[in-house]
Length: 283
Ligand SMILES: [Zn+2]
Image (cartoon, rainbow, N blue to C red):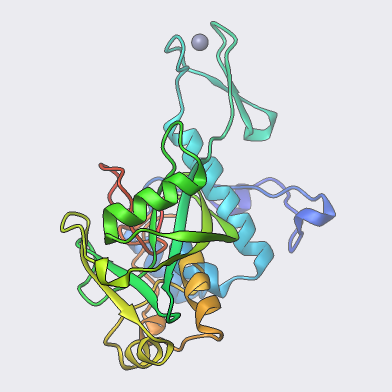
């Protein structure tokens, strides 16, 4: 779509000003167009996981919401009750079935993401098989049907890293629309750090770090950390007590992928037990 075809959207407007904000998805961006855009206008394609850390909080929130909503539309074209094509209503915040009247709304899957500490205040990080070998992050997984947040957290950590945790503390949350997670960030403590071991399935390696060890390894490039916009990184830096200068932060903007697509690896930092969603797990 030519930007000139867009309806009037107050330039520079913010949600607090109650101005309309429009979302346009590009299903198949042409490489030539992307190159032209990058060369002539200074614009480029980037995924949210990387670009988020370079946007203002308002713009990052807008992009997160846009991605969540457009992904939901792309994946929910039919009525789950009768299979009829649904119709978009309420400015895109509801879909209604014209046959049976069923209404559906954008969904969110709760997921827990956890920084595990020991009694010496070290942090346990894991490296997943599908990442580059030196990438380490916190542990994450979806809350399964019938589980509490605390039970899901303890189960995921024991499954993936072998340790039993207690003293669970909530830190904060982050919307993670890959495709529709809400990451619930926690700290937890294990009193038997010697039990730490990778599950050998999703997790290739687990490793304890002191603050100095992690800062030195990240700066030297021995360890790659999750992106600065991720809650996983926030958990790690909250524990560390200050920002960590990781050489992995300097990676270039990911290759063009389209505003409504997510590049594999555009994730938040850890692992989960839900299969079949490579590149879209809560991280
Ligand atoms: Zn229906």
